[in-house]
Length: 233
Image 1: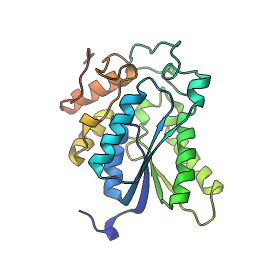
Image 2: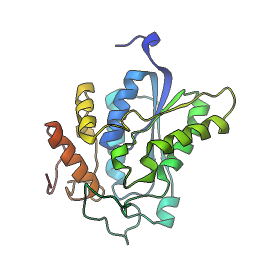
Image 3: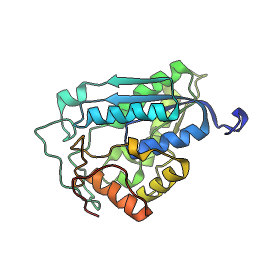
Image 4: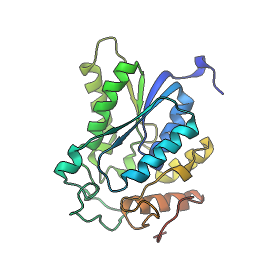
């Protein structure tokens, strides 16, 4: 156990979706921070119930007593993504995809970070952790490193002069398989994570997120503890 003086931050706010990247990000924040606040946002996604369940299990696992679940309605009201609009089909997975997939939720991470910054300033957190991954950025513009560098500047000019909040993206340059290995080294409970875009009981094994996760565990030489209907790897 690290002493307080060895920690990078006094208090960190962690955006925890319930996915494997955010869970590993939370494990890293647990090492970095003396105190943690977990934030989960329901936004009308297809697997909302399962992700919320995973979030609550992760709060228990890490012993986080300060946490909040917020709900954002506008994503589902306006649609534009297969994650929130049932009239748009979730595409078959393609791990080599270069175009923006239908699962992209417009500026979702920008919305999440704005809310997290407001809360972090009130709670006097000195860091916000988010599990963005550059490997996903060919599909999602708000997963690119330059997006977070730009948002860091927004935080600096948009908060009180005495507020100092660092945006931390500790897994952003990792391959998915490296994230899996890092998670196992830190004891991340992957059984309490969910990646499927479509199903809440048994993962489909066919969407982009499932395929990326399946490939990551295979390349890492690790067993994925969640059930799949089918698997492409």
